[in-house]
Image 1 (cartoon, helix red, strand yellow):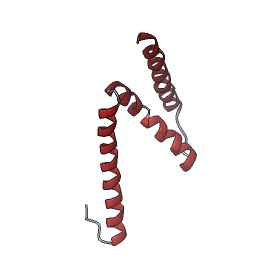
Image 2 (tube, rainbow, N blue to C red):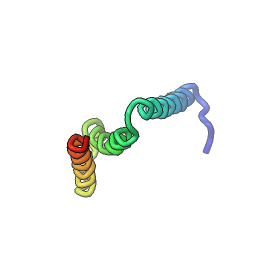
Image 3 (cartoon, rainbow, N blue to C red):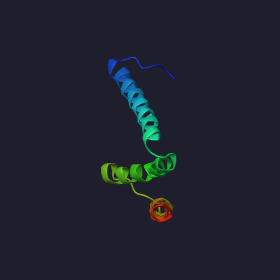
Image 4 (tube, rainbow, N blue to C red):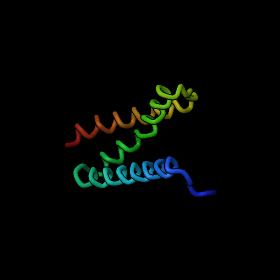
Length: 88
């Protein structure tokens, strides 16, 4: 591994670091305002959103297992939302 040398390389490193910082900051703020269960449920949809964006923006193809996994995540989120509404 060699450290970045050009200004462009350092800019990429800075943007990546800053975006990671913003992600952790927003997670902390969300946990202080919303229940941890809801935040973790939203976080489980992150890989599904990333896969959909990869399909749309990068023309990536998903395997049948990945489609099944995305379907299970979406169905489990919907099932929790449905059950949460009936318990309170």
